[in-house]
Image (cartoon, rainbow, N blue to C red):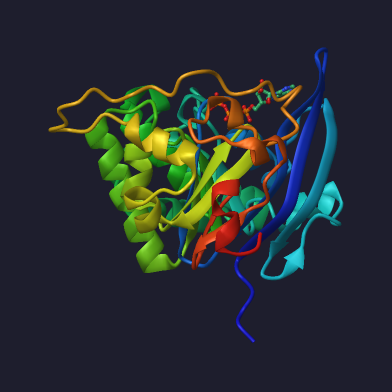
Length: 324
Ligand SMILES: Nc1ncnc2c1ncn2[C@@H]1O[C@H](COP(=O)(O)OP(=O)(O)OP(=O)(O)O)[C@@H](O)[C@H]1O
């Protein structure tokens, strides 16, 4: 029997209560991440990417209306665990999280070396000496000179602070690191340099990553697989090469055509229209209203159809290809 994937997510759902009704930020999402693999969750602002990370890590606001589904690590569902057990056994131990804008959340009055060492002391009970020694190692791993261990956050550039935050996520040697827009605030060269570090860590340590981003260019740097999100759902899930060269879902194709490229003559085309409100999504395909290829069937909600081996799209155009 094949080993269970590191992470297997089925039917993950996170709804919020709001004045406008129930917001279906994450609506029955399936995902798989294998060891040493980087999955990029790609999607426009507001499609539910951060909510997906919150649901995976159970870092939840108070107004949750519904959290459901299966989040299995090495084949064991973590959903039935109490919050206390999840905190003790899963978060930081198995899965670490780099929140959106985390580099701005570093404590300004604590030296960065001490901040990086803290998860090891708090979550693994390591001694101060051991934690300090490991902090040196992870600084080197993410490409920050150990001369900076004794510095304060304001003494570091944005790129260095982001590496420090990444070092903090890696210090407990988690199997999976989830990063929400980790490099969006940085310039292109710094982004590329951090992505190269992540690739090396993935290769050398077998660490898995989920990278959440709206940025197609950054995601293509590191992705082994891509999950494209639209209005709270995954609409395409595929190997990176297939996704970037032959996207299947009409939304994926339009998204790719909207990305500016070097040496491109024609102007990239924006996708007309707006995503639907997650408080009142349409009953059928959520992209139908904006889709140039819509037809009668799109009034019904499509399941995920197989486009090719390991490549699924949630679109009726692929209904003939196989079963969802
Ligand atoms: N605590 C909350 N209560 C109610 N609605 C929320 C809450 N947090 C997020 N939402 C809504 O859920 C939807 C998804 O938000 P989310 O932040 O997950 O999207 P995102 O794709 O990460 O966007 P961005 O890239 O802009 O952060 C949005 O409509 C947002 O307004």
